[in-house]
Length: 352
Image (cartoon, rainbow, N blue to C red; front, side, top):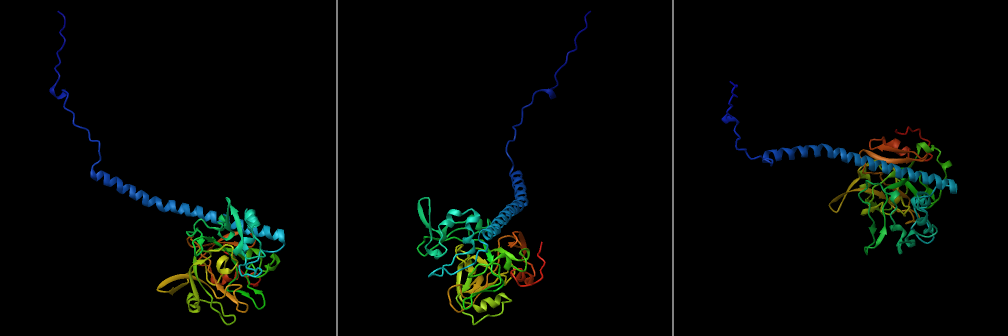
């Protein structure tokens, strides 16, 4: 008798059940958790991204300064002298800057060819894209730090392009800049009123400042006559006491102008030292130049034009030997001043 197959009954538990609907959306709690996590990640990453961007800008700034000081060396090789700071052109006070004189060596030959150094910068023009514009309004990229927030032109009273700022000033020494009675120039690397030479830098090229960072559109006091030579100020309050006519935002806005408040700096105060003075109920971080070079035939020009930057903790500078260094805000003031003299005879150790 053939064996019978067992009969298997399908249990009710194995019967197909009605499926529950799948949930495809986040709950409010889950969404809030995800948003919170994203916020934390952004908070952690953003400072790192900003730091990386600033490091890149600082490196670009360093490269700009390297090009500038090498241009000075090339200028000296070609002319056997250093480019002067402000010099009085014929019949005008609009004296050209050190930066204007080295234009051919920072890849701006066409701009340099539009300049007549025997005349003032006010009338100089160049044709760009078929339009005649003032040389003074031309933007020279190598003269601008990528971190400077004031990289835009300064218009004249009618709103026309007039001047363009810069971020790097020549070293004019600690305080005294120019004596029109004797044509005596200050102790900085670049002489006012006449050219100098590398051989005049007796303190050594590696021990003497060449250029330092400055902030475009810095407020400054001017036009106050000081009787004779006075001691170098020791505190910002000394500058406020001297006073003068306050210009709230036009310092270092004219790369063509060789005067110290426009294209130079002094070491009266350490880098980024705030010189806070109050005028018309507002507080300004100011520079000071008592009499602008060429504006008086007898009064000495003395200036506190601070080296400032948008970099955290210090400023980039060049030394006259062609090197670029970062000088911290905490540098000893006496050392800072000694580094700005070309023949002071001081013994210095340059910060690494």
